[in-house]
Image (cartoon, rainbow, N blue to C red; front, side, top):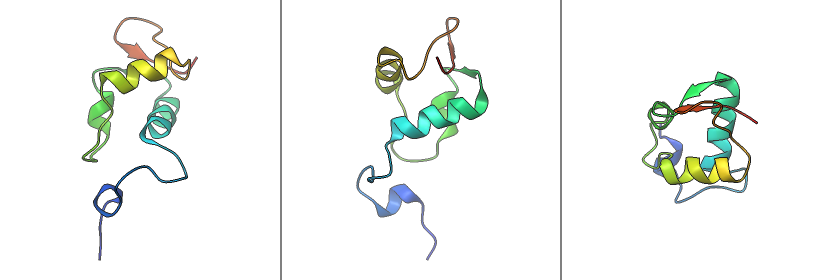
Length: 72
């Protein structure tokens, strides 16, 4: 049976969270347009403005210019 992760689990596992995945994706992209980031994921639970804002506030992501995300 083939299934996506979000179809077989009810929440984040002990390995990490959606925020961790988002930080890893931005790390791979080096610089990312903030409006496009939620569309990178096909999961039913997608990153939203609140999650992105929380990651920026926690210092895990930064906005080098308006509308852009990068690692600090």
